[in-house]
Image (cartoon, rainbow, N blue to C red):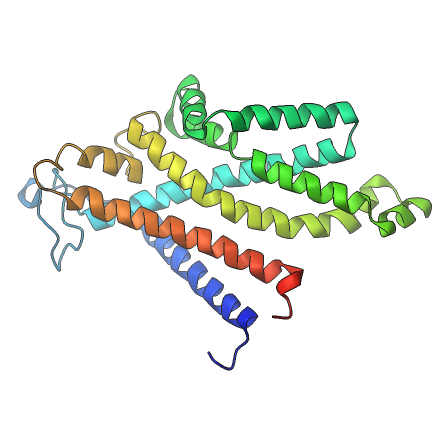
Length: 274
């Protein structure tokens, strides 16, 4: 590793993080239903070599259930982040390329959404739409696009002021051609980096809203549901039911957040020669 420069090390580390996240997600998705089946003979067992996370009150393996829950949370978080990022792209383009009134209206909506705590807004939207996956997706997607939209809007405004954009207009190029050949190549890296940075926030909000009872139904093996069920048994000394799944969630979120930061370093032209 000493022979590699900083950029190569970041690329290798980013690839390793992506492989770990893909492995955790794949393990949770393809986990058979028997792996999370309950057995009252194994109920409330502490962590052991056979069951590193122990079992819950129904005798279900908490490690297997945590992997299954992470897959559910990551799926919802990825879908919500993708919808939020797409909303941010369209809103930023409309604000930057439209009239001043439209730009002012978009900025007002962004300030309005960002002035309300995300958790409260997600709960309200999820509850209004009947909770479940649909309500949770709508709530998270409708509240996480603002910061990325503001960033992309500033990027579009900066690009529009460049000289080569004015030259293209003088040469008779249409707005669609300019968008496809000049604006879009600059926005794609920002889009993917923003998507990765939105993802951990979406996962945490899914877990928190489900923990409070306004998200996924109790029968769904999500991390928020696991943590909510474990609250009944902490006072009885069954710490592993809350600590180990919660710690795993924090580690995954930190890993995704670091992956987004590393990807931004790789795609940043200023660090290309480091």
